[in-house]
Length: 421
Image 1 (cartoon, helix red, strand yellow):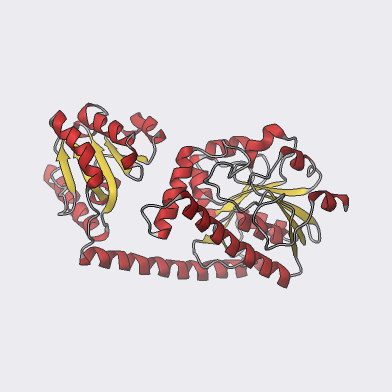
Image 2 (cartoon, rainbow, N blue to C red):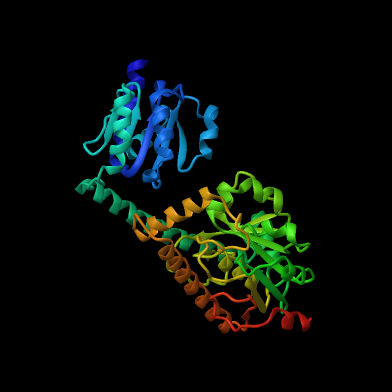
């Protein structure tokens, strides 16, 4: 039996070696053959986690029973993996550094670019603290470049397949076929508010509880963590939208507790929610930088840069013909005063978002200003396309935000709009 298990693990390791590439700035930790969180490995982890030089590193802890160490997930960029599983093998191959106090399973073989250290002395631990962050990025081999190219092509093929599949589903459902509970909810919402007006609520610094109190009798779409202003206002949104998987995975508990309005999200984000608010409806989406307004959410919609794009497409679907933006400042959300409250998001969520931007831009270091410019540029592109679509379909979009940088839509005063009830 032991020979059979060894062969299975050995074959699995080499199979994953063929399809998995190493990631720089990723460290795998293991103590006591996965049974402990202690000793020199723990000391080294806690030291480098607090070291600013490791701000962009990712940490993986291997445990026989990871459920006994869930508190580690509260630490920045830390994940847990069960020792001996397929995911464990993949994490080992991806890790550029592997640090343990005992020998790893014999079927795991470090690659030429991988640093594998047994922590058997205090001096070794101290030296590693200084040396790991100074290790230069590895140069991908020709085979690694080939694997990455194949994965890129497969991802493009997947996008083309999903585009065709979602379009076919959208056509069928628009003709009353192949409905499920989710698509039936979307169908019942189509043109339900034809000819009416609504307000899309952003979370910029100009948003105030006083302005929201004025909207209690209006149709409104809240977004992301707007519920953090609920203590300052009696207003509650008619609908709520969230599209970011980071918010869904990190703040799912808050969402389920605070959001009582019907929630709209993307299918991918929906599946990331461990706790889903009641009355949640999702739409199919394609992740692509080539954003355009679909106008048929029974098929799919594209989401980019801002959750307001999802809210706008839901509003189009419901038949609203006058749409007003509130709190959409288009300022840098990662600077002080980027939202209506300083406690809008957690440090972990903000850092995860910043690292996602670095990956997208293929930059290892970015200033706060560069991050802000990137976010604003992408948002402006989306708003321009929404304005173009609205103009072609007889929909008026106005900006009732007090200040801010968004000048694509005509400016109006909130008081003047509300006076025309």
